[in-house]
Length: 435
Image (cartoon, rainbow, N blue to C red; front, side, top):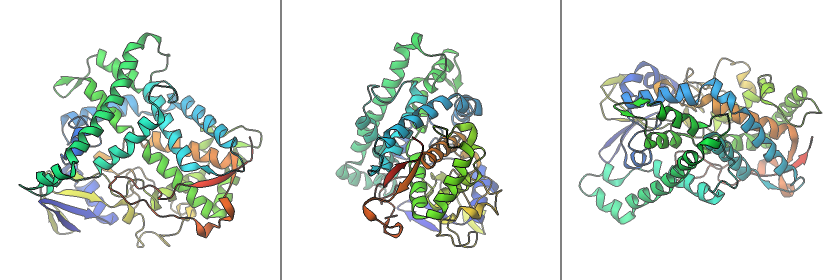
């Protein structure tokens, strides 16, 4: 579908075949990012790897992140953090046994805590960044990133609309809040560097690389580069996915029981919780996660690409400086590829075990593909699988106040954001199974 957003040409890709053209055949022709006011400001003028335009700085930043921050070895080194935070969450839920809990809020807090400890090496609670301060920034950032500036779409007069709506003022306000969080984290590490534990967190790694005078483009690694890398570390996508997974499981008792039986058979009755090394044996759990990402990709539209040269898709001309949006939500529900696409059926992946979400199968694209595929897939899936396995292992789950499965509200929250939350927070009643 071709659209004109004012002066911005935009092509929406909604089929696996067309997505393959963009993400594989012509990946190099359209692997850049548009320079938009919101993303440019919040990424420190393209010093991150999600929103930076394609070029030498992006390539070197991505290489640094893949080798130093998201390698299998680095992800493994954070195992103790994930397991400790899972334990804290399970204790919190266990204390509320037989009473409804806001599972959406608890899952979001868990992911925020894991990301914070991986980045900072200290616990989120009592760190100096209270929960409200950080949790308020995240949705504001998402709102800015999900918006176009009128001045970018409408020549000559768009700036007047932006002034009247306060768009640029909002961007500056959000940037200052985000920057203060990042600066606090970096300063805390510099001030207490001598007392750090032996295990490096993300900031430790970046400060070490700065001391080693690692070069990014034509400059040394700077604090703004570090902040750009921290900008990548989001908490929303993992929390959204696990929340949707729990929602679908409670609506489908057969699937819920099958997943719980598998987990409890693998972990055994006497275990306090499921450990990471046991996750590899949970084949049905991985099917549940795949099915959740198919039906509820956290980013229904992948981050927009910008074309750098002319090419064709299915005979249509795509010109330079055209925005390309991949509609992962529509692709995951394409009836030509998926039987009963609106139903939650994890077993569909038993017959299609080769289909994965790592960018090689264009009918399932929650993390993108090609050069701009998400570099943190392994970290994200490891954390999501561990949390979901333990929620299902340690508790049986009931709907509150006599609700039935068909009464659950599964609406998506509308709004100008890159991700899609469940509109109504998920409230469930936990019944202790192990604890």
